[in-house]
Length: 473
Ligand SMILES: Cc1cc2nc3c(=O)[nH]c(=O)nc-3n(C[C@H](O)[C@H](O)[C@H](O)COP(=O)(O)OP(=O)(O)OC[C@H]3O[C@@H](n4cnc5c(N)ncnc54)[C@H](O)[C@@H]3O)c2cc1C
Image: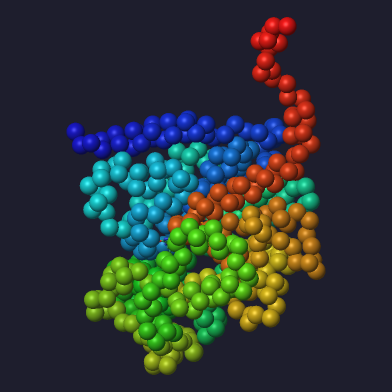
């Protein structure tokens, strides 16, 4: 019998022992929470990697009155089975991701338990769907209690609590009152698809001939079609490959840059010094680093480029910024410096830009949230200036001119935290450190807010150490 038969069951038993030895989850120390399910200490919105890591980090701190929602179906959270179209992750397989310091919770442990150490050695990159399987397992063994098919629709902070509205799959609404709200809403949260100016009108048409790569594109409709893909990102190559594999007759990738970016500077930020030191840097250093990384552009993964490089139906046009896009009825004409391209469909693999007004749930808050543009009014108004300027525990801060009581009860544990706190809530490498930071800050806030209760417990505490007859007198 191969050594790894029943390996997963053994790993799970080992994890239980790890948790037991570390007394996890820590016993709840918060004031008893009300019976009603509509009130909780923490509401986490989003059960992707960041939301799951946050939930487990909080339970490890003894914070248990948590509700956790996600609007996707159970097991389909995040981009992986939705709009991600790569074959494998960009990240190297050895990253420990959301494991929060538990060796037995790593992707490697999970993979080796099923495929043995030989399987691990021969694995090159983590398959996209395999990663989703790992996240499903992570959710189960860390005891996350996620309620799926529930969408957060509005947020109203008050000085003592936050009241949110949600809608379920049947369209029924409900309210939840929470003391702290964690938005782990991913790229969908606080952002919107970046659309080149020339394509704004065609993008808003309802015929879906111009779509963003984050849409659920029906690739079967692209069979036999000419497809233009805009951008040089990982998504550009993965969407181009998916279109070719679906039978597109021709795929043209158009990029603004005059050379394909070949380096991923983000990789040079994955070390403890950067993770822990970045949040302490001055504003000038923060913006300098993030702008530099963005300006040098991130190379598409080699595997994604090789996926189509030899395909005679694929074409790459560099230095080809689109200056005009016209709908000729039968086709869309894209005008660029490199000439015109006629396409039946256009896919915008142009990423997302931060827009606090964009998710419906944030609309009533957006005008109150302090942004980097408020903090650095003399800086050029690029997209970074729209990013929220967060406190040390990912909390929103109020603009001085329009304070909103309770806004700091809302924690923004998404990629929009990047300029404030570094790469703690966007990618796999430092998500555990991000979750620790978040959980520690939330735990401290709950304790401080409940100091009367904790004082009373301290004064009432009387468990004797000595029983009175240890020293006979
Ligand atoms: C195509 C793609 C490939 C990537 N590849 C890599 C990679 O190789 N390596 C790497 O390190 N990073 C990668 N990333 C970046 C990052 O790791 C992922 O985006 C990751 O999914 C981030 O996790 P998250 O929990 O922040 O967001 P998500 O996984 O997107 O989860 C957010 C969840 O919030 C839910 N949600 C949003 N709004 C609401 C609402 N109003 N109500 C209820 N639920 C809501 C969504 O349903 C979703 O399930 C990739 C990202 C993308 C888009």
